[in-house]
Length: 148
Image 1: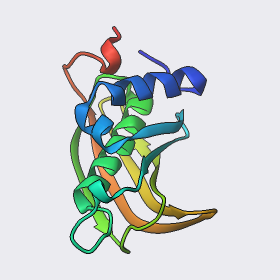
Image 2: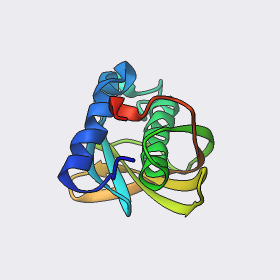
Image 3: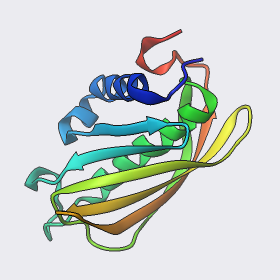
Image 4: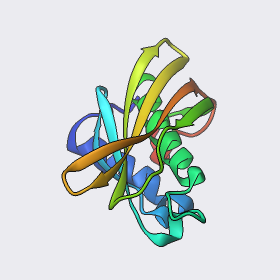
């Protein structure tokens, strides 16, 4: 099992994102990765907005899925999939970037319940724009990043 902690964990997590065309398209970057939490950032730009100029809900949901699943992998190992998640949009997302901060609420041998809050960042200020809960499960799939 790959241990997701420290600089190597950030590089590993980023390599997973870099292998996903959609994550590359939105510019997702891993800033922190450990069993205690993950931080993933997406730069705000016009291409990820909806018709009112706010961050599109689909992009926020994808960002949540990334953070939720990385935390499931931190708890269960790299061969995981999202079983389900829900997201609540609490405010319009506008700023310089969107930042997802994920954590593990509970983990067993095959399933983890994870949480993610998404913030719109403007300068030094962060404003909560969405919150999500997910169930991440071990799966009979190759480990993320091609590990064994």
